[in-house]
Image 1 (cartoon, one colour):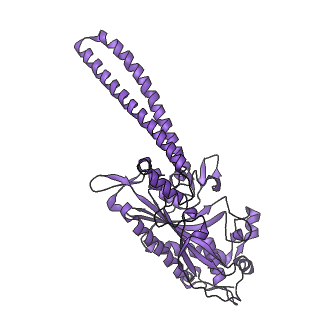
Image 2 (cartoon, rainbow, N blue to C red):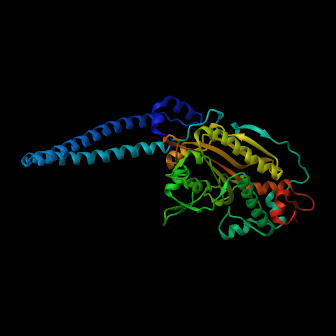
Image 3 (cartoon, helix red, strand yellow):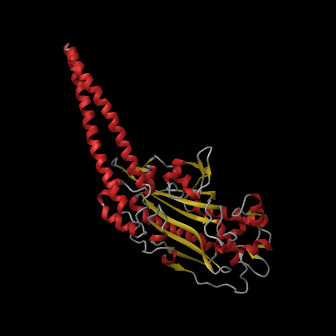
Length: 422
């Protein structure tokens, strides 16, 4: 969430930068400015009222001490009226703060200067792309390979729950578990501390990282408990530090965690949602950094390099793109997407996003740091998928198929205990 003070001081810049997203902030920003002007007026009146109450209280005390008790009656009456007024003013202040907050929650993060202009994924900027080298005679889609080798059962998942909930079987389940273990080990070796987190979060947690109200329709809700199934481990991991003041010397804080992820909205229809392309439940390993503002973009590059290293270890064709303004997530200031090529579908599949949210999340979550002079300020938060499993698994099946079976990437063989699925 943007800070009101920043918005007020940089009105024109905010409106121009948000237009890069295709977001017209003009009316909202002007409304916030008008509301904040009224809030400040009430704040002044409220503080003056409290000061007058204190002054009268002091005078009453002096009159009691001097024995002039009879003179205190009108002062007490006036104090009573002022206390009622202060209560009304305090209520008015909260109303204006709530109105301002309701607008702020609807405004996305300001794009970084490196975010390219554009409306959708077509305008994303490719910054690296592997050369494609695969046998055009071996391009069975992963959903056929999964059935052929009996490693993923989509129909069984539909029977148990519904579409978008596959069942992994035998070597498929073991390959899935191998990927999770490899990702976690790679992350912890790089200094990320592993955490096991709840798979449900409360409303405050979902608001804090920006899932609410922006993605409310995409989240599964346990209505009786007012809890949400997590769409990503980013939500509970980042919320570990909600309302925490961190010592500057402890930055950066690096965490990684595995979780199933739940998303109601599975996207478009047809080939885009076939097989593992888009699911309602899927597994993902996440990395999160709590960082000093001056270091966050250096950290973003390190996280990008880290995720690239994972994909290289899997020996899969990939590309990296910088998301344009129109494709940028609500909470992000700058995002790099990683995509792996699907030979059967002849398209790139997104397997990771690594993003810098700057203070957008930390302002909502009140995650701050204290420097060695005692000054307190907001941290920057960053996160990345390292990695999302379904499309990685799909790419492994499609890019490693042979006449003898599916060859398992060497880096995973110590986890699976086998080198080929047949």
